[in-house]
Amino acid sequence: MAIEFNTIDDFDLEGKTVLVRVDINSPVDPNSGVILDDTRMKLHGETLNELSIKGAKVVVLAHQSRPGKKDFTTLEQHRDVLSKRLGIDVKYIDSIFSQEAKKAIKSLKNHEILLLENVRFFSEESINKSVDEQSKTILPKKLAPLIDIFINDAFAAAHRSQPSLVGFTQIVPSAAGRIMEKELKVIQNALDNVEKPCIFILGGMKADDSIDVMENVLKNGTADYVLTTGLVANIVLLAAGVNIGKSNKNFIKDRDYCYLVKKSKKLLKKYPSKIVYPKDVAIENKDKKREDVSINNISNFPIFDIGVESIKEYAKLIRSGKTIFANGPAGVFEDPKFAMGTEDILNAIASSEGFSIIGGGHIAAATTAMGFENDVSHISSGGGACINLLSGKKLAAVEALKDSAKSVKNR
Image (cartoon, rainbow, N blue to C red; front, side, top):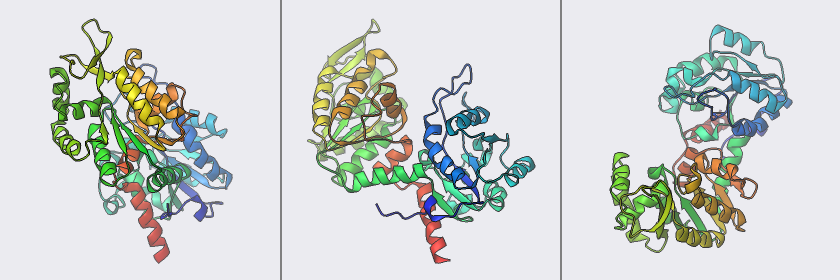
């Protein structure tokens, strides 16, 4: 893909104060408050280390969870983990743009890194507005005068238009960090130069996003087959006239996904040979055990995985693929009884010779937990951002970086 935004390579960083937006939002134990996984901190370490080595004064802006959730907390522990990961004593201040925070930024020396407080403690961060509107909010107004360059490395949040993600791009020179740059190159290149046959595996709980992807990749001819799992499969089964049982119908209705059934009916009619749905599913029976049943015999038990026969069919198609995109687990993989579909699909992806992309979120966690992370071509750091790209949508933060690069050239 042609690079339409600035990268770290476009700036002399020695002695510059660089504000870096990263996404180190991490799973936290609800009881102890201890960070359970530091994968994202490891990823962003590449950008932060490079900036430090090149002599920048690095100010890090990040978030953890969102207001109202149990894991919405300070970034003090993140500082400790980052310090270990980077081998650098990362500084931390429990505010974002207070006088103390400003003083801490101004006192930074070359190569030093300062982590500011959870940016979502700032209420305006939760409001989506245009780039122009976000540039006039308090956060960029307070911090822009203190920095020379803004770098956005938060690909996982790139689909959001929030002050910390887009608000600086109109008022200071801006660039993509290494994770942002890599994600965009890998995913877009795979889409632009897709090798056939191309297989999409769409599952998980975010059925609206997945069915948008299905529509886009079938319409533009990218996908040869779309294999459906999880809630996506249940919706497609219902659209195909299968009686999936009252409890599963109500689950779809309660999530306001009935419109997706109508949309799926149209897609099935238009692309009957390309959309693949399960021929059997795994239910949790009255004894709370896994039971694989034909889609003609689901009755009123909750569907928690695809069935064994479907797994075999899906694995055969996956292994034939030259390009493979997977988004969302096949079932409730957290329960060992219903992990089979997800595990066998990941095993098929890992053992295929095709170029494979795992689309972030729960499927990325499952890939790592099940030991397949070294056998797939790319694991995306951002589920929401990745699926937006696959569905043909523009990412707000990336568009802001592109506009920033154009304005710099025109000046």
